[in-house]
Image (cartoon, one colour):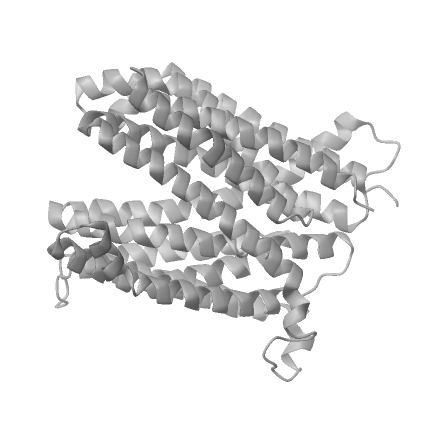
Length: 454
């Protein structure tokens, strides 16, 4: 097949071309994902000012909602993979979004139904009746918003797969404004509205998520490529019926499972930090928050890399798909390494932003050296995971994540935390080892998959 770049071009020039394209695609994606973190952070800060009990209820509600939501979002990864491959083949397919939306509605309804059953789950875990009551109420208020978030991601993934990440960022920015306004009105009760505390924050977040999903969907369906589809009669699963979305669902279900594995693995390490004591838990929480924020850089580049690799694969160009994958991997790891060095140079100041406790700062700051290495491998594994899905892989990639996180990271973290003096530092050493293992396994899988492109 003809290369996406002319054969006369050398690898350095082609790499520069990929890096320019990645930069254009990645920054709106990264900022959009940061918007999700900011939305939750704003709720925590606003509710935290009303009292510890309200904050505990909100935290408990989010602790239940987030794993289910992340798994549901992961189920949508097939949309970006399929739409990017169609785009690379020169045939933009709006049918991908229609099939994706129907899949999103099904997954969203399942997630919402599960979240409405939060109360019995919290009671089973052993929380106090008051916290079960209040945390369960928060989770139920957040449940419809989880549905909206999953639909929003389905639309966003279609737009990102076709090289248009900007609208999703605009919708996310608007949602953050709605979320802030809703919290301001409903948490303490303003303009005659009742003060609902944590429930008010959850209601505001749900309104914001439903609004951004509805707004982006309405805008997207007015695009010219959907004009022919608007004239077709509405059918339950669109052209080709249920079978038409089989590959998308297979990639998505594997992606959702991988996201769930990762979430549970990191939640296990967080619980381990809690068992070490309040100060180790505080240190772990601060450092993990830093890691999560830096991770958004890699996450944005992972989606951009998946789009570039998927487009090359759709064009039947294995050499360009391979180069696009390595370009994204190098860019993500290079940028995260640079950020890690900057954080390390200002470690006490960075940790001091989160806490004024000198003992906590002195304990957490040195661990930033381990964190810098962990973040490097973490960026590599997320880019390679998304890239493999763009090449149509599903359960083998998920198996790589399971082996790395539950075969390496979790057992090593528990051993280092509780059987050595390393404590929470051992948890980050294990995170680095687990992410490095995932990256190595996924790299081998990527080289195998790209060799099959034709």
